[in-house]
Image (cartoon, rainbow, N blue to C red; front, side):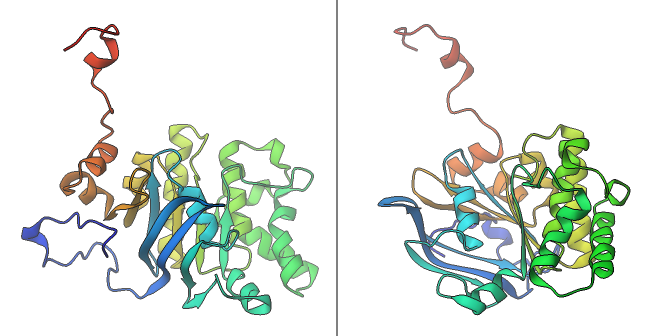
Length: 285
């Protein structure tokens, strides 16, 4: 793809990556996607695929359009141009029941968790079941408890969101997003606002769910320790070029990318030197 750079060194270009199912079929396809607001273009001509069963991370600097891209991928916004295919179905053009059928196969969590404060964790998880199924109350109750158990919160089912920690709220939101057994989970900044230990626990939960349930995860993040832990592959959005600067396994992008912008981002290099930061204004080098 013209909008991405190959981070693998030439000497390794023919060596397959066996660390994850690189030959797995694409479950998401983004084709010639241009996104923005009004006449303002944030990103243009984006092309990438997400493979079934992988953890795929969307990276980029502040204001690059990471969360906006995710919101286009889940159908909240309509793109300026291009297509987004989930399970081979184009969510951009789908309408009515066809669109709902696509959306019921995905789960979404937002930065804040977006739980209803007046409802218990179990009641929050039950909401999608009440909205989209005709299951009896007992079945919905058991499913809600099972989903909370998957994220380690079964004992907190009767608690209100205000009675649990921020990390537990994030996990409860994941349980709710899994209520309808989605194939794909979209997570927007799952580690935002969490301390390092809680963030690391959440990383391990994502990996466990991906491995045990075979779910595909699309994660928006700028937390590099988390990215290096969970991501099979990542794309980096570049605000200056308004396209994808790189695509590949994060450690390969960090160590082998020939794009200085990509290397700077993954190695956390400042845009100016420490000397420039401390040098008095008006004094040259």
